[in-house]
Length: 259
Image (cartoon, rainbow, N blue to C red; front, side, top):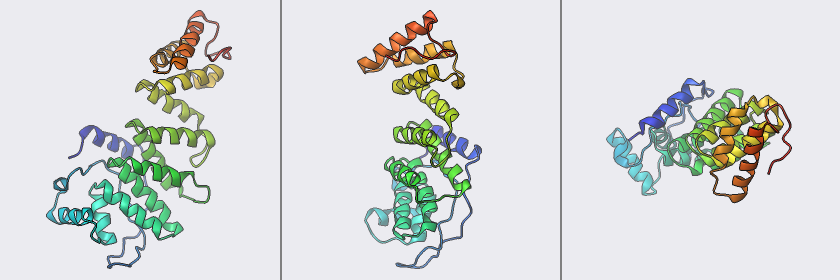
């Protein structure tokens, strides 16, 4: 059943204001019936690892049919997805994209996020690929929701979500250019033990005092970077740390050396 730590992360996401535009309910027809649009529900982390994790016999039967590759209606696939089945959420998103309807891209992105929350890490790749496309448009509320979803996935340790967010914030697409969020995300990653993020943040902060990182924080970041498995990173971090401690470089100066 659900991991309570991950449930807390999901609750934090929802509390942070993640919202999505309301959408019409699906058609409940049989094979070949096109959904009018995908309903939107809050992304939750109630991961279904086993069929017995589902709360009703009907849902358990539906999941067994899905795993046996038997046909399941759009409505039933959505019900499994909304119950926390990451595989169903992923497959449902795939079905929506196969409709080749621009109006269904936003709902598909939502369900990829749901699948990622439910432990299907490969869904993060599909989600970020959609967000990278310049030919797609998302509503402001949808973008906010997907940004918050990626943030929470990054905090949970998804390297793909972390890297995608950094790229998005630095390029300005699709969330707008957010240098302060680059710093915030790198800080979170560094504090979680990511040595490359620590080194990246330290060097950027040395050349940009607007990051607001003081000498003590720089020292700590470089200390984390010095634990890297990469010899070059360790050596560069050690050199910079000596210079920071000696006062030859610091937050109010431009770094004279980065290695």
